[in-house]
Image (cartoon, rainbow over all chains, first blue to last red):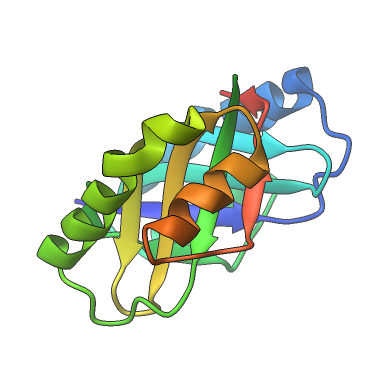
Length: 82
Length: 82
């Protein structure tokens, strides 16, 4: 199991409720890919979202986001953490 | 107090020990700016580092990183979190 941070762009003006809905869409299907999305942070001014996840691969993380309706190709495996 | 995620580039091949040293350089001075760096994640393949911090302003976060020797201008205030 590895740890990943992924980045979404274009979420300008998105609300807390909308972020929650997007996150719940991930949570609803993530187990099918062996992924778990732990936290997500949104900057509604720039539209950036950062998600912290664990899972078997970058591709599995991407598949969950894509199937949940908010694909991104910007996924980083982060094996080193402090 | 606000929450921030900042992004560094160019940390290709950096080790866990080096990340720890960089993080400790932040911790040593962060109180002077009212900032606290909670966690940092490194992808040594792409050289990206993501830091999660709290503090009074984006500029305060930037000042700590600059004074600690690893400046970045890519700092996002993330008021919305799930």
